[in-house]
Length: 615
Image (cartoon, one colour):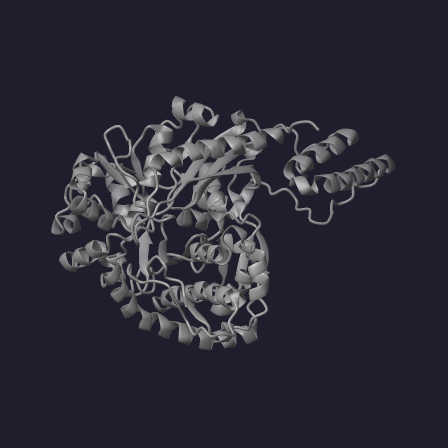
C-alpha cells in the first residue's frame, strides 16, 4: 500500500483520464487511506471489481461504468459554490477540542473527514461544594500528547506533519485563569462549571442595573450566571486579593492555550461577546482603526466602574481576534517541537467548544439549532432577531459568525450527572451505559411516576440559579435501577425542552435539533431528546462537532475556504434523522408539566440546603 500524495486522488470528469491500470491502482490506494480500518478490506475488494470493470469496458470501447458501490459517496469538489480551492486537495488540518474531562486532537482532510485522532485526560478537583478547578499546565501537556498521538496515527495513513496546513483549538467556556507576566498560572483555574461567585452575580446585577452591557442577561433582568468572566474576576479580587493583584493577565483557557502555541496573548471575539459582556463587533471595529483604549472600544467600562473592577481592563488581553483569523506568526519553535508540527504553522483563533461546535454541526443559517452534549448541554441557535428576553442568554453579536445573532440556552450538568449515577450503581463494577440504556428503554415515558431534576451544578436557563441542586421525587419500592436511570435520562431532555421553549418565546425558531457529542453514543438518549422536545434530531457523519468546527476554522485560516461558514457547509454531512414518536410526545407533554412544577418547588429547598452546607 503506497502512501497518498497530492497527485494520487480519484479522477474527476474535468481531468484527463489516467491509464487503465493506473486508474485501478489510484482508486484502490485512495479508498484504503480514506476508509476506516474496519472497512478497508471489503472496500478494497469492491474497488478491485470496479477497476476490472474499467479494464473490460475500455477494452471494448464502451463508456466506463458509474461507480455505485454501497456506501460510496462521490468526492466533494472544493470548487464552485462551496468556495473552496482545488489546491486544498492533499492538504490537512488539525483540530483540538479541550473538553471538561480530556483534550482530543484530530487530523482532517480537505473534505472534512477525520483521518486520525487521539485523546488525553486531565483531572478535575472539587475542593468545596460548587467549586471546580483544574491545573492549566495539565491542558498543555495533555494537548501535546494528544496531538502527537493523532499525528502518529495519521502517519500510518501516509499523512506527514509537513502536509498539515493549519490548526485551531477550542476550550471550555468560561474557564478563567490568572497568569503572571510570563503567562504562568498563579493558581488552579476556575473551571467553567465553578459556581463559587454566586454572591458576586447578585452584587453585579444590583450595582450595574440598567447598564447596557447586562442586556445579554435576559434583557438586563438577570439573573447573571456565576460561570461568567466578570463574577469570577470579582470573586478573585474579593477573596484572593493577592492573586488578583499579582495577575498580569486574567483571561480564559482559550487565551492561555493560544499563548502557549503562538507566544501572543489575545482574546477571542466569541469569548468576549458571550461571557465577558463585551460588544465584540464594536471592539473589532475600534481595534481595526488602531484607536487607543477608551469609550467606544466595546469593553464594558461603565459596568466595571460601577462594581469597582476597573483594574480588570488592564488585565484582560488588549487584542481581540475574530474566530478563524490567524494569530500572530503561528506556532513558535518551542510549541512546534512539543507537538511535532512545523514552525510557523498558522493557528486559527477558536473559541468556546460549544460555539465552535456550531460550525461542526453545519449550523450557520438563521433558524437552525445546535445541541452540544457532553458533561453539560448547550442549546444554540442563529437568528436575525437581535432581541433579548427573559430565560435566554444573548442575542450575542459577532459570535460565532459575523452578521448574525446567537441565542443560547444551557444545562450545567447532564452527561456528568449520568456518569455520577452510573458510579453509584456499581462503582468499579458498574453496568455499562449500553446495559443501563437497554433496561431504561423498557420503561414507559415518565418512569412510572419517578421524576428527577438534573441541576446538580446549578441551573443555566431558562432559570439561571447557581444554587439549584439535583433532586429525585416519587420513589416507591417498585422502582428499580432501570426506573432511576430512565428518570435521569428524561430529566436531561426535559431541561432541554425548557431551554428551547424559552428561546422560541423570545422570538427565535427551531425546526430541528442537530446533535453532537456524548449523546450520539446512545440511541435511547437520542430518541428521548426527539420524543420529549417533539423535534426531529439530526446526527452528522462526524459526531465530534467541536473538533470538526476547529477543522473548519483551521481550513479557513489556511486559505482552503473563503470563510469558516463556507468550510462548515462543505464539511458537515448528515448521517441520520430521528423522528419523534407521536404517542411518546403526547405522554411527555404531561411529564414536562410535572417537571416544571418540581423545578419550581425544589428551588427554595435547594437554597435552604445550600445555606446549611455553606455553599
